[in-house]
Amino acid sequence: MSDEKIIQIRNLTKIYENGVEIRAIDNVDMDIETGEFLAIVGPSGSGKSTLLHQIALLDTPTSGTILLKGEDTTKMSDKQRSRMRNEELGFIFQYHHLLPDFNALENVMIPLLIKGIRRSEAKKVALQLLEEVGLIDRADHRTNQLSGGQNQRVAIARALVNRPSIVIGDEPTGNLDTKNSDSIYELLRHLNREHKQTFILVTHDLSMAAKTDRIITLVDGKIAEDSRNVSPT
Amino acid sequence: MIAGVFAMFEVDIAFRHIRSRRRQTMFSVMAVALAVAIIIISMSMMSGFMKTIIDVTVENQPHITVSPKEGEDYIYLYHGFEDYVLGQEGVVAVSSYYEGEAALQYRHNVEGAMLLGVNPEDEDRLMNVTGDMVAGDFNSLTGSGSRIILGSKLARNLDVDIGDTVTAKFPGSDPTDFKITGIFQTGTPVDETLAYANLRRVQDFYGQSDIITGMDIRLSDIYEAENHAEVIDRETGYDATSWMELNSEILNLIATQEQFVYIFYVMIFAISGFGIANTLIMIVMEKVAEIGILLAMGTSRRSILFIFLLEAGILGLAGVIIGSVLGYISDIVLLSYSIPVPPDIYFGMDHLPLLIVPKNFIIAGLFAMAINMIAGLFPARRASKMDPVEAIHSV
Ligand SMILES: Nc1ncnc2c1ncn2[C@@H]1O[C@H](COP(=O)(O)OP(=O)(O)OP(=O)(O)O)[C@@H](O)[C@H]1O
Ligand SMILES: [Mg+2]
Image 1 (tube, rainbow over the protein chains, first blue to last red):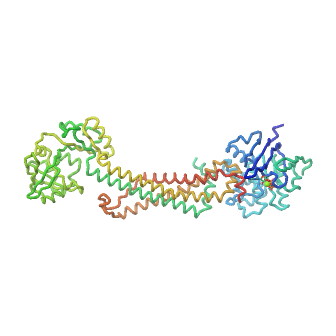
Image 2: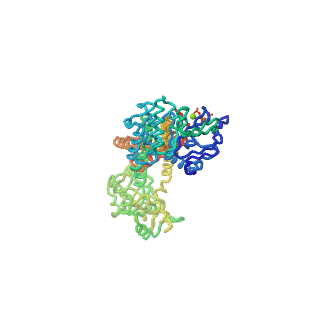
């Protein structure tokens, strides 16, 4: 059944070295199945963000391997990694990080344009995504004309616009109030069921984590607990 | 294909960056434009200067001068040689001459002169002496009797005019009377020494048979002179010298000066290049987070490099276009004002020589673009090497 394991992590270690040696990720093994909706929790400084950056190919590990869809990403060229980031991975940050010079629609179009899709076609797809996150009427607004929750929805649309097989969120609702947080969570859960995408979310919100399929707890760069939620909502 | 390039998102991003720093990009574009304009004007002056010198030189000199074989003083059977040279492609005119020194006397005035015996028709075809005549007729030399045509200064020094008779003297020759039938003026030093007479009479004066001391050649293309001279040298053994060889000193001087000027061009462009580099560094610093995001969304490092090189290219190209137009307009204005210059410093030119050559615009443009791209390389590489995580969280 290894076909279903979309992410396979083996002996993953990330050491930061500036003066003192910090083992942010310490010899981690982890398998994630296609379509899983997974939460990573743990105390501050336990290595959650570091792990996500390795999986999202935003950083390179000190040692160990990460296989995405069966391919060893540590052996890839920059061009292959870029393509993978563009087409297979969607990243949602805690802060929306939308480009301030572009409006909502243009921001969502960027991953499509990077992929080489024609502008007219990209516009159509991006509008559809804005529709899905409920912001079709704000397409020509810039970040400073949108609320925090709205900006985060645009960022989600941008992360999902290429229909990546893996969506990664580093505290995607960390900056939002409970009401906004809940509705974003519902949105992600809905997209996960709709498109069979794999979601990996880091969260401090235990009530939110409780609604996922599986919770991995990191402590000091190691997996302290890996539990399956039998009755997620 | 072109439309495809313009549709690329890299181009879109590059233009947005430039627009986001309008004032600064305008200044750096103007710096490049100014550099290009200054260099184009300077190159136009150099080209005009060069052309004027070559024109003056070539107009007053044969394109090739043939001297006797080594160790000999004369060219003996020159008629066949004349036919051989005339038969060559690109040869327009040939003039054989006998050149000797003589003292010219008129009453109590005596002047040393270069007595040049020529066939007037040939010499006229070669040097267009008729065009330099200020009195009399050059072709009068064909007439009977001993006739002579003097340079204007020589005539003034002897205090003679048309119709007077001067006596030519040379050790070992019989003093001979020559009647003055014309006076010429070229504006060069030969006006003070040169005297033309019929070839036959000059040969007689020196007690020689039908031999010559040299032959001058005129070509349709002056830049073929060196090749022609070499062929004549090789095939006949006579010593053929091109005008370039004859004027190698001044031509080398100009070439050296040109090299020196190019160093200044590089320096001027380098200054404008710093403007471009500075603008790009500012943009890169301001857009660190954006670069991080673009990398995170799958833009390759190569694309990031391309975006910023493109910006350097766009700024540079704008500068080159504006600078070329500015340079062209300045050239036209300078030409129309005909700026006066002191002739004793400028080889007898009385106004600033200026020549608008398309090649100069191309050289200045390519030169500027090359330096701008090099200037853009440093910030572009810095942008492309960013760590996306660090970049994204830099704000
Ligand atoms: N660029 C870096 N250089 C040096 N050390 C780093 C760097 N990034 C992270 N670390 C260290 O690695 C460890 C793990 O950091 P990480 O950001 O992954 O923690 P986290 O679990 O995401 O914490 P939080 O919940 O506060 O976001 C920490 O000790 C942190 O100080
Ligand atoms: Mg973190």
